[in-house]
Image 1: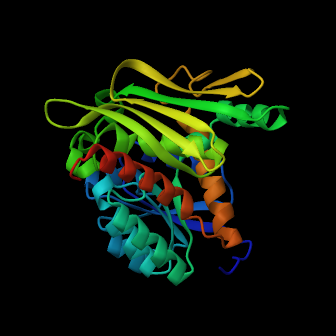
Image 2: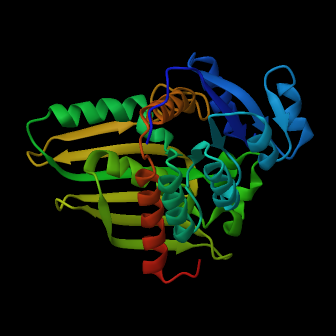
Length: 310
């Protein structure tokens, strides 16, 4: 990939759902990035941006007219593949909300297209920029003993977290349930500590509608280190944490929500990290597609192991 000159990066935000406010706030804290355009099907969602950015009701129109260097794709999961493909084909860099796509075949096709077009494709895993997770990563790196095992918990009540984006509750549009939605973030945290991992075992619990609401997923790194991911869409409250056991018996811990009393409060600083890293990858001309595809492949592996038809 060719490195970009040191100019301000013009970004279009496609999709103004629940998570969009964290992106918008992050732009205000990053002087090297300009929110140049926004896109949404709903006129009321576009109205607040009248004096802020160019406004569009369709992503194709934005790509053709807005003269952006990159887009943030924040649409429902089932539209990720289409919007990302159109942006990459137009030579526009992409930061897409997890998951990269809802079908692993589409994710692989997007990664291939990004390489063909020499364009950055980056999946937004906001938890890898969480301050507590980064402190834990530093502690592990400084320790004299390697990791023996790792546990990541991602427990919440999805109806509360979906807010007005009710498409999360439609398994066809979301790509599944807790494995498809929370799984990518949790799997990416595991990969942050252990590198590439593969599925060892999984236990998925579905509700009366057939949607996966709980799951326990066992992973194993290429070095043989084990990890467990616990997912729950029906939890009474919220737990997002990481526990590490070192070979010498030392136990280390990070609570992703610690210090953030506001609902979703940790996301304000995490999305600053997302956009900072995305811009750095874009400016450095890096192929950033591997992380998003790796998480999607683990989601696919869990569902395939369970024997579910996706």
